[in-house]
Every structure is written in structure tokens, then in C-alpha cells.
Image (cartoon, rainbow, N blue to C red; front, side, top):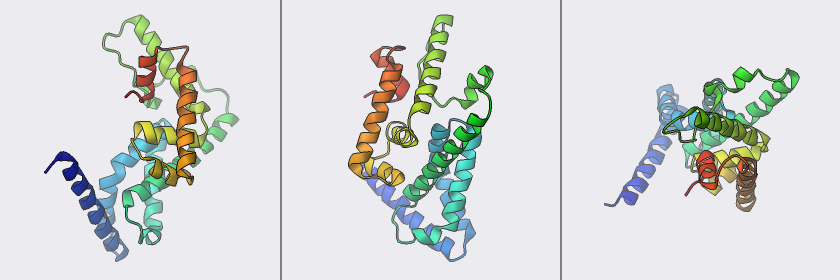
Length: 218
């Protein structure tokens, strides 16, 4: 049995196990839903953290996504993939949370420089730094800051599409479900996001480092 076949069978086993857990949850077994939470919470948190940029919001997204999933579980009954379903709930709520945060920040004064530089709020630590000289550290900080600003400048749909495609490895169809868009429109959204990020990073880095910073290197 080759590795690909094992992977397909493993995925199928998870889907079947998820379906059983959903049925048991609907029958009143709350422990069965805990199984679903434990199985999928890591991936949901990773998506939420990369979209929102900080642990607090990411944890809120995870909690809300599984709460909404539980409340709407009967709407899922005919679906085949619980993981994709709760992933979409999380992505949609993360978009709402980002919009809310933008409004909150707009009502406040500009954030303090020390907060903007905080590593806890930085999901973009992708710049290699094998021998961190002061010059290289400065360049890395500038690149991270520029990447953060470039991501913030994207539309919610573009940021979601970029994160899901290039950082989470999601397929176009899955992203399209989250964005409630067609496959072709989603491809265009991903393309626009990548092009905007490349233009924003071009003055700061060479092509190879730019691709690594974005997470799009081949």
C-alpha cells in the first residue's frame, strides 16, 4: 500500500468517524462532540491565528466556531465533511472579528509602537535568520512589519483566500465555500492577493526571500 493510498484511507476513516460523532451528538451524547472539537481544534486555531494575527482573537474564533457548530449541527446532518464545515464557520467569524477590530482601532489613537512590534501578535515570522546580525535583525523586522501592513491592506476576502491557499494549503473549492464565491472568482482573489503582496514587498527583499516571507515558494 503506497503513501497516497494510506492518506486517502486515513482521510476517509476520519470522515466516517466524524459522521458517527455527529450522529451521536444529535442523539444527545455531548462527549461525542468533544471528540470533534479535539480532532479539529488545532487546524481551526491555526487558521484563526493566521487570519486575526493574535492568540486572544484566535482563541475566541475557535470557541465561537465550535459553539456555533454545536448550535447548528442539525443543519450539517446531510453534509459529508464536518472539518470543512467548522473550518468555514471559523473563517467567516474570523472575518467578522477582523472587521470589528478594524472599527475598534479606528476609534482609538494610533497603536503604540511597542505593541506593533510585539512578537506575540506576529504570525508572519517566516523570514529565515540563521545568523542574526544586528543588520539582519533590522531587515527581518522591517520585512515582518511590511508583510503585516501589506496583509492589513488586503480586503478581507483577499486575506482569507491567501491565508487558506498558501499557508493552510486549502483547495480552491474549499476556499470558494468559505468566501461564498465561484471557483474562478476565488482563483482571481488568490491571484490578486499574491500580486498585491509581491508589489508591497518588492522594495524590501529579493525574489527568493520575498517568496519565503509570503509562504509561496515552490
